[in-house]
Length: 113
Image 1 (spheres, rainbow, N blue to C red):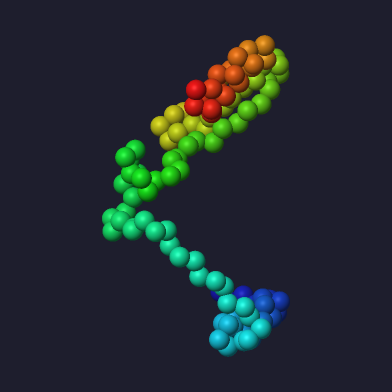
Image 2: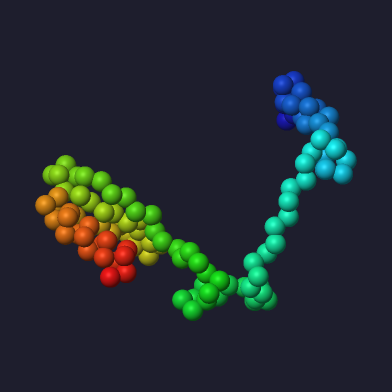
């Protein structure tokens, strides 16, 4: 069954059709060309990233999302997004009195000590 077309939809479609194509710096002198940057000096490898630990091209690895919040008992909860194979989010509960020791230990990893 055919339905009548709303005129507002037709007006929108006609406006899109009548919009001129984007201009390039060669066609419009008021548009400034974007400076091209040089690629890194290291030659690119012809093969795709292998995603392994030994692949120097991979600089950021996948990591599940994390949330940190205070629960109703005043403890700090660190919750990590469940993977595809986990039913529930894994979490760690830290009493506030133990936070200084946890933070000090994490800072040691950050400083490389």
